[in-house]
Image (cartoon, rainbow, N blue to C red):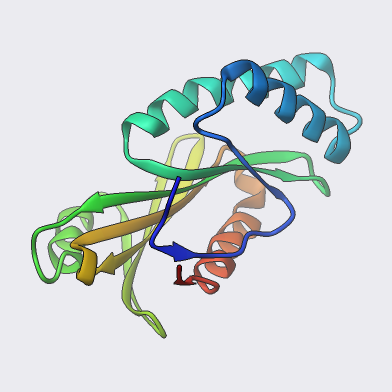
Length: 172
């Protein structure tokens, strides 16, 4: 799916082909897991691929244009990285977004070479997720980069992945 920018991802990220058939995605994910997590059981692989397919349907319905599974081989954990695009009709979408989210999430302003962004952290029971909101005013669009995992002990690794990916964003 076409995005108006490019970015680099680490080797732990395996892109999900949001347009391919479920059978193809399951086969590809199972093969990749065998490479990076050779000690995984069939039950572990089945659980991950089933969860992945349920997520893909939700992602597609929520404007996600790019998604990748994250497999950390050092400590077998999994997560999800996404990029979605959302239409915005106001000049500064970040201020009202921050105001709306602050009662429910940690929200931090970031000044970057790409301009102002928001870092948004959600800590729910059993799952952590973080998004970075990047306005694209010339397109009246906001990009949301997100990462999530249930493996809370490895949360710092996942946040570093997100920060590093966002640091590589450049015009497409």
